[in-house]
Length: 357
Image 1: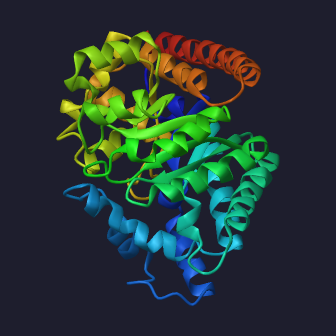
Image 2 (image 1 turned 180 degrees about the horizontal axis):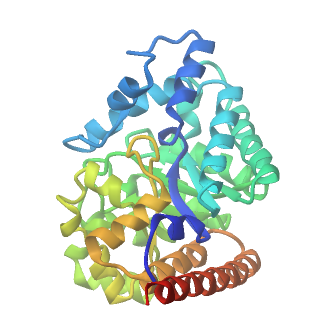
């Protein structure tokens, strides 16, 4: 079956690793800035997008500079709800059926919002989108490695309080070098005692030791990025044997220099070896990407065919932090949907072939 953007767009998908503050619409940033009387470097869409973009970044620090502008406008309940709603809407347009969106509530309190006000605003946006579009969203509360571990503990408490209200997990993000995850162990201990799902950014800006800590010190159920896992065969086998999902973000990995090129990306090896790899956007705005683009990259650079794409999509649904019952229902539904798409595509290709005879 021929892989096209139209086909990928039709297929039901997940996006399990996407940052709210890295995925705003550029026009929304400008509109919010004007309404909030915030000064931007420019109010021209193309120019501002170029400034915020991380596509030409030389390292992770440069890649993260664009967040300065997105966070400027995400300090009100209205802006947070709008950002959540629009991200879900944009995702639904390419048939992403389930998304897990992460963000750090502390970063949205600079103008006086409380953590509960921030949380309610984001969840309200996703709840409204769920009513309007064919998409379900879960929220992952994110701590920052470079912040005091006490803040992570506070954020885990917030995640636990909202666990039955739309929050599905806890994450740790930020610079890996010099900020080991084990320093936040008290927060992860509390999360695990309260049966909270955990995913951690690891093996992106630092080696496999970062992944080791995420799993063995912090009890992580998934690994964000994990590109450096390729450097430790024993740990790779452990991750594979225990079916710990890897949240791959191709465009972002290239932009942050987690990999030097698409050709150097370990995704094909991970897939062939049997790891439970998932594909995700990370930051739709900063990396100028969509889930459709990310899957098209696998075809362009790794010669992935429909079978591999389908398996990665299934991995996404299997790896979600939904309850087992919800996951089973959703997976069965999308398998039926994919079967219908496959039948339609094969019939169309057959008709096309006959017309050429």
